[in-house]
Image (cartoon, rainbow, N blue to C red):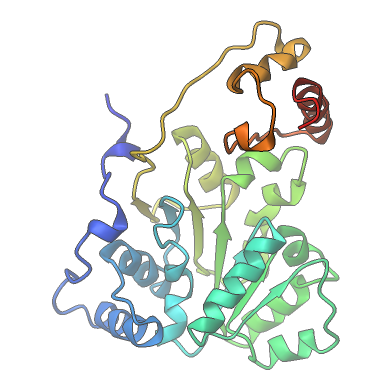
Length: 292
């Protein structure tokens, strides 16, 4: 049986944006407000996500990089003056990038991470200066960081919405590298009942989806918006190492022979889940590419 994740392969840019159901007042408001704020017509699937969040319903969204899954994160703020969005992000760079994007849409957003130095931050957030807070799991969960603020805002009748961007990090990081990712579901205990979560990623296998749903305490009544992750310019291959960790040098099979200058090296991304392993691979590649 084909993987249902491939059942919808149309890029978002090729789908008609003007097919929202007639008579849906909230959906119409979201469409019009988003058009006014961004200049873009939101796509049906973006409206699905935003409408679900406005109706206090959890969402699992799988959509490819660059497809537009960030927009629905903030669409509720266009129609609900009490909506306050908390976005959990894995990297400072992504946080800063999203802050700029939201500011371009006239959404008051602020990125809070370990480098933030802002004496009036707590009072400004509590006063409602920002509608979107972009931060890390550590900043959101630790008792001396943002956790007391999100608790207090819940008591002030703000409509909190929690977004876990790049939610696949729950599966790949929570056991060792960043354990706080495995505790994000506990945010429910600090928030009003029914606070919606949106877990978004470009890639999640069936087993990863189950882990994400369980970790974030989802109930069965959640929206699964699956755009698929098939890409026409990508192909998948598995290489079985002959000697496990002892044969890390086999990674060089991916590189062309006879490399003499940097421009001979194709653009390459190598992901590993341990820092020690990354340093060892770096040593191997330095030896394989002498003088480059």
